[in-house]
Image (cartoon, rainbow, N blue to C red; front, side):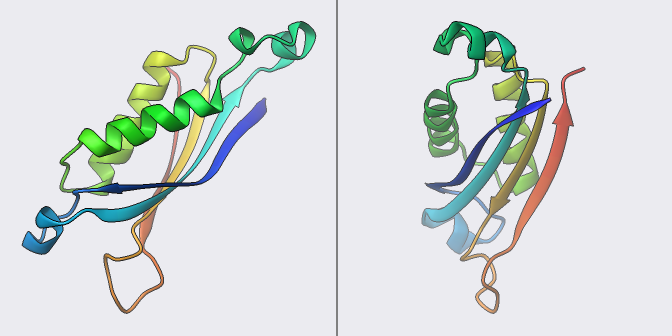
Length: 118
């Protein structure tokens, strides 16, 4: 299966379990890999035959911006559900999120998941 990827997508969110995290937006960084058969798009040279990574990027930013989850687990699962719901060609998603300001003694912390269309 072919991979369309988005690396280093940056946005900010209200996310976390601590009071200070609920008051101020924090930066989040996303890496998204979507397994998509690209043969049709390669033949047609038509964006409608593939997944538009600019559209996915905008959708993820909008979803994150509107969210108020406490856990990264909830946010990242919601993103996968959204991608599968709105992009039928996506068969599998590998998604990681980094939260660089969560633990000041670290460079970053985060979560990495893989989901497959059922």
